[in-house]
Image (cartoon, rainbow, N blue to C red; front, side, top):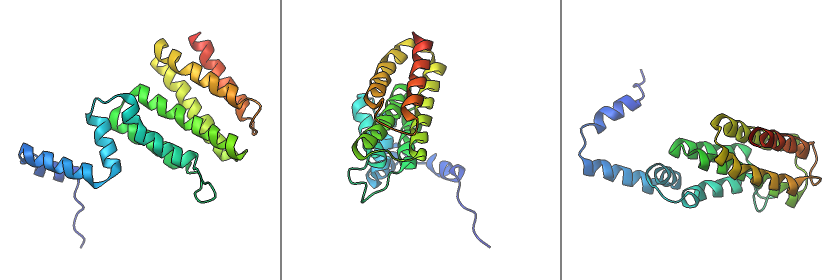
Length: 184
């Protein structure tokens, strides 16, 4: 018979009896254990400026979506999306999540402009991310937040219009136009 795998409930029952210093030591060890843990704790606990807390997640997105040497590393769409998801779990900061989502799109556009058209899966991922940005802005209904991101998306559309295939610029333009109609 195999032993039952410990659950969060098991861990929590042990931690409840720990002293503050011991808990702080555990968190310090987790922070030192991996860059991902450190990034998570920094995003969750520190009230640092947005650029500082977003930087490690932006780095992960860039490395995944727009690798400097694509002949050595494939584009990893899932890893780029995971960076956004990890930040969202760590902070819940809507503006930061939107910033990372737009950055994902920008990195994808950079990659295509540098290395030429990619494939349908790649553009579907970028369109899906843009759709998520649109839905998030509409659901939030915050005109100030929309006013911050719509011009960035419009500028991005101008940068790619006529430069890429697969109908991607057309879809991009339609999504941005929907946002502009919604927020004026």
